[in-house]
Image 1 (cartoon, rainbow, N blue to C red):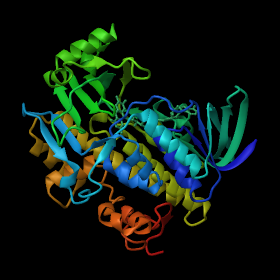
Image 2 (tube, helix red, strand yellow):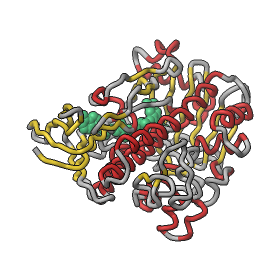
Image 3 (tube, helix red, strand yellow):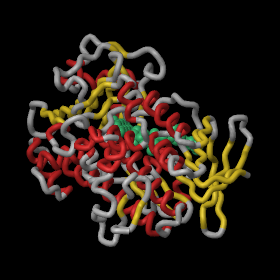
Image 4 (cartoon, rainbow, N blue to C red):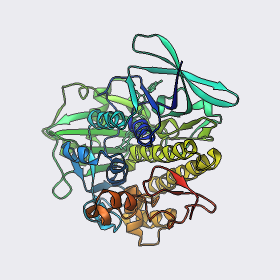
Amino acid sequence: MTGFDVIVVGGGPGGSTAAGLVAADGHRVLLLEREHLPRYQIGESLLPATVHGICALLGVRDEIERAGFVRKHGGMFRWGSSPEPWTFAFAASDRMAGPTSYAYQVERTRFDTILLRNAARLGADVREGHRVLGTLRAGGRVTGVRYLDESGRERTATARFVVDASGHTSRLHHDVGGTREYSPDFRNLALFGYFRGGARLPEPDAGNILCAAFADGWFWYIPLSAGLTSVGAVVRQDAAARVRGDAETAFRGLIADCPLVSELLRGARRATEPPYDRLRVRKDYSYDRTSLYCPGMVLVGDAACFLDPVFSSGVHLATYSALLAARSINSTLAGLVPEERCFAEFEARYRHEFGLFRDFLLGFYRLKADERSYFRHAGRVTGHRGDDRTAFLDLVGGMSSGDFDAFGEVLAEGAQLQLRGLLGAAAGDEPPMFPGGLVSTPDGRRWQVPGG
Ligand SMILES: Cc1cc2nc3c(=O)[nH]c(=O)nc-3n(C[C@H](O)[C@H](O)[C@H](O)COP(=O)(O)OP(=O)(O)OC[C@H]3O[C@@H](n4cnc5c(N)ncnc54)[C@H](O)[C@@H]3O)c2cc1C
């Protein structure tokens, strides 16, 4: 039996972020990932808050910038009452204007590997090919995990905290108590694959995601690097029979129903190299949990909750929840703030961010309206003080939490100031997000009592 401060289960974006931020604070972190990276994952369209917020905090933004991913300046939607597509650009919001007005469309094989290797660089003990089987408990706390090592031998490891970041297939999430609740509102099936030679939208939208509604659902069309395009049909449950049977035939039929996408794919051919050579199906039913933590254990990313992918919020919510969990763990381990208070702050902020996307999406799916109505809806949901379009942009850029305020402004002023800017006002000046709540320290890695 080996002892650590923290054990992180899963080496996706949520796990790598949590492990990196806790290890960088000087704690002993063990990360167990069942696969060997690079491994395939869906979820390729990122938000500016992930690239310029979380990745900067992890010290990995420059590597991401150099990786040759496609720049995403915003999105194009054929959605609602207007037959014409409408577009949005992150740069139109003051919070993102300038050098932070874009995100990336990433091959997750490469993106996730960069984050995982970075967690190791920050000091985490990263072990791939290690599958966690269950948690250990003692005295009302989760105290560690049982796992299979690479040779298939069962072992145990103990820690003050276990972070479950093992994604939607998590077997551990029950261990915090409570239940996983599936939303009756977003019950979709996704069928997706990859093409070479797909056309690009005209500049300046060439790197943007396109979401195009059709009779039975909607399509994503995501330009990846080296001429690769990710194409997925998200089909409503009442039309799910279309996805059963031969997937190739079903996919062709769905594409034919969406003229915008079939036009872009004219002349394109399906990718033939692994892992892009086959069609995949995912139920992307959205879910939430009644509990997100218990003494000694916390859930982040898809292990905790998942929301319909139309606004590409998955990696943002995974990495943002990992940041909140890391702050809570670091503050508790340092004896700065009582554990329960830290995790109450984690849960309140996480539910707030998840809730904004969920409430916006409910209206986005139900309203058959024009884009101005969607922007108004975003304004109502977020209570944004600016105009409705900016409310929409800040929400879909992952900026509504205010946790990454002002990063654009401070980019030129050096790393120290940049980090402070990323996290809002200087320590002590930032008001808590909730009455009686906590604020982050200037380096972003811990909580503190306001004014403390
Ligand atoms: C159809 C669809 C489209 C999507 N599109 C987007 C998009 O465009 N943009 C976006 O941001 N998000 C998108 N998402 C969401 C995105 O895929 C997830 O939200 C994101 O990958 C969650 O990250 P994570 O770190 O929580 O989990 P994951 O990325 O799933 O990582 C979990 C890791 O845990 C490992 N693991 C699992 N079990 C164990 C175990 N027992 N022991 C050890 N390791 C284990 C897995 O191997 C995996 O590496 C989409 C989702 C779907 C379904």
